[in-house]
Image (cartoon, rainbow, N blue to C red; front, side, top):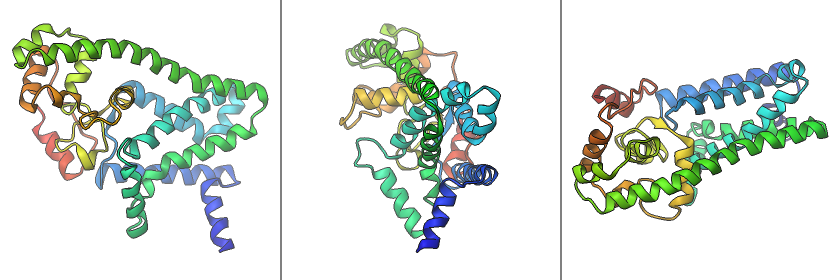
Length: 282
């Protein structure tokens, strides 16, 4: 029992930094391969979220080196940024507002088949963040706090703008049941494209359990906005379903944004549903 506890401790945060780096790298690789070939949970992140996750992951992976190069300031700022990023991943995998069925499923997979381990990767990185935070001096902890605050404040501004747009879009669609009538009252902007693209291009829940057609793009701000806006509603993750059927939504998207493809290119998944979506993309 004691040896098992020691083994778990070394896996979670090995005292040797190069062993720790190797374990983290191998764990991350297993997660990517699992997501690509076995069971796709996360899809293609939009550009800013891909860059952000890569930055925070590399900072955790090479924390001592980044700290030495920038006297700890950049490394602790990125460490702070990683907190809302990782918490978002944990909430998404937990299947929010659905009794944490996501992690219940992955825990069962872990117990029975050992394939649920990749789902706990955000927790693993968050434990690293906590250990590095404890190692920091008070000045660096203030920088860490700034890193935590920046994405939260950015999301607050995004949500404030999106909320105003959301009401206009939903009211316009609810009063016009046909695609042509709906299109005539919609503005061609970023927020309209995101809402009309839900279920077509943007996924809002765990892929393998809910999306069916498997829309491939992942926009964290869009998903987090829907969590707060539509918590507890049956169609909260697919708000268009309350106002438009699937075919009408497709027509509405095509007429509002004829310059955009209806489906996004999805070379990221080699599962059966991922390949079928890729082949059928227009």
